[in-house]
Image (cartoon, rainbow over all chains, first blue to last red; front, side, top):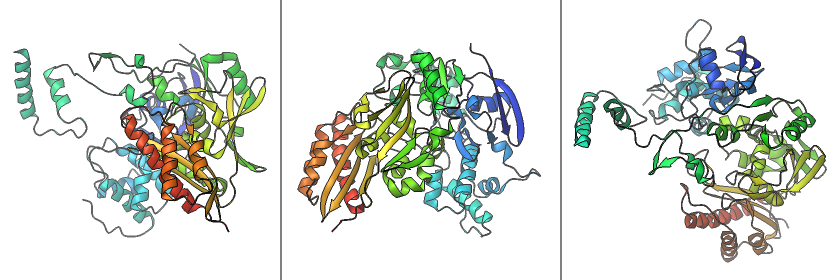
Length: 167
Length: 361
């Protein structure tokens, strides 16, 4: 075995310090060391995006990154997405309104990815949303309502009514 | 008989589970799990899908069925995070073949999970700011090895001087991976499926390699020997890519046929050309994932120089490019199909590059 190394990061606004095995993957660190089980383990091969978290403003697949690489980073997981008073954030509420999920497995990754997408492109077209979430797989929805949910959130943020209904 | 009773048990289970849906597995695996029938082909990762040219020995099979699944947890290693290129190179020199540099990690970490790579030392390059710059140096553009695909996509300098790089970066993997994956990693690891190597060959780029004894440059055209076999010596680090900037008004294209977002190319072709008086003045063509290495299609490029890219010339160039390919047969199709697609990609890339070029006087 190799020596454990210290890591410090800010996760959902709180500073955490731990000793980790260098080979510990970020997703396992979040789920097992910090008990943040919102980010899911899907394919483990960086295809499905269920493990997506926000790392310093980038959406990354936490199954394909060592916790050691995130030393010093600010991380947001789905647990950190709700408003301070516990109500759903605009994006979360939009997924609910537009039925942007069925089984919910991909949802934490979808929402974490969509939040960065909307920060970079506050009013994306359908095609831009599709390209933006192309690293996230959903088996249930056929993506229609996920795309609508992201655009619903964009419309809400931009103070516009969203006309389209969920399918 | 045994088989029969399992089947009838399973049809009973199936009836009882009518109200349960599974969108991912279809219902057979859960039903089999309940009935206790051994799962015959539990495929978490199809290792052979990873790359067709990995050694067959890595695939554990028994009578066509998987015996064990990949562990998906990397082996142990010592983690280093140097702050300078000199420190990184010293670490790589000290540990030799036991050490690997870690950039974005999206090629190496999956390989480590599958235990196809088990380096004892990982040298994380993330803390080295000097590797993350994109700069003009005379007539060249120098891209640090640690520049991510996302950085390349966002770079105004690259958009202006080397638009083919931005366009190619956008065809690599998916947004999450592009935040971490680097240009240096893409060109250095020698995977024939990677897209940047052919683009770099097409641009006449060279790679800056730094070792304990100093720095040398090697042309991208001379760098690739075979899958994962490159001109990088043990202890050397690829620190930058130096690209002679093509003239303003040049035409460019990277045409990539792929099955889905994030896939390697079934066939892809890069073209850089200049036009003068309606005719091709200069041209370079290179190919991705059509042989154990990227291919510079020099004969094909020579055929189009001095022409107006009339259909007969384009066909001759596509045929010349196809002639040097040696594609593997894999999930992307048999070799004959991929070779044919190489010709199609070359023809499309020539047309698109000519369209983008300013035609000159």
